[in-house]
Image (cartoon, rainbow, N blue to C red; front, top):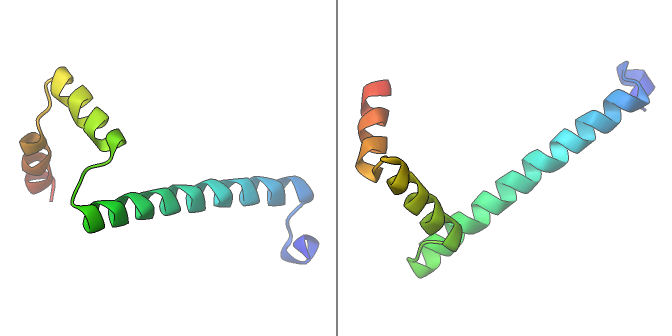
Length: 71
């Protein structure tokens, strides 16, 4: 089947591995978003990330200001 598309076996494996990680990332973010929407709480990972950003000098408000400037 891959040969009909002009792909070798190695290329097909690389594409499948990349697709696996993209789907894994999308499912993880979807679950996090649903958890936040249902419970109204932030996940532990989000809390840790915000704490690290605060230590580096970034505030959540800076993120929104950057988005306004950028777009």
